[in-house]
Length: 317
Ligand code: BLA
Image (cartoon, rainbow, N blue to C red; front, side, top):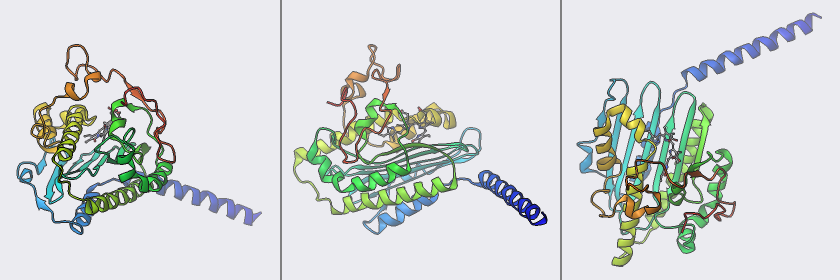
């Protein structure tokens, strides 16, 4: 009897202490994305020469309007990289990473894209090598960059289930290995995300290091237009805009988006949002008045395990 008592007493104490520990670790666990950026910068300098960007002087750090927390920015260039920039937001209630690397127009290499939005409870994550050209209809471009990466995508698709419906147009900017996911905050998930970030970034660096500089003017201008279209999409429709406006006000947020995050949107081309996305626009021509006319779709991952697109094709021509 006494043995049983002891053991039942020990079990409950152990359970109790486990519960206490886990609640403490939930409470004290706080995410920082700084080590992600440190990793990326270290790794980049192993492949190329990074130079501080002229934008760095103006865009380095900002205080949110309520004075709580910090917004930090870094930006660089390299012989193959037009713009490598990171934005980290750290406040009492959220941690955000927006880390994107745009190759120069002489390269048709994908755009590296990591967008992580974290609160105490939840995470909204996009990690991808955003294709510069169409990977749904242009098989040669898809095979050139993504064929060998499908196993990597599959590994993380299992660890990070598809995040559900998203703005339909976004799918055209995503690759077959995109990680689009939402999950509850936990130290384990954070470490897995760090590992995915490192793997995807290393793979992207391999691509840019091996890429052959394009000399054909018409291909260079196709790359340039594709980059401009991407910038126009994101500067107009980035889902982080609302958060940025709340934190720093409309004027600063707009400047940050157009001149820093999506730098080039006003310089690399003259086409407008309506030119690139005519189906998106309501009759009054203002793309901000309504959401997408096609709305949200792709409840499930629209790529199969061979990297074939299996979503519907309404707007993908
Ligand atoms: C939500 N962010 C989302 C969603 C996507 C992305 C797909 C789901 C909602 C939707 O489909 O619109 C991210 N979409 C992208 C990316 C591309 C794209 C990376 O088309 C690239 C082509 N997110 C940020 C930053 C913040 C942020 C910097 O990157 C905050 C400062 C926040 N993203 C954020 C929030 C949501 C979100 C709050 C949920 C709100 C919403 O669903 O609109």
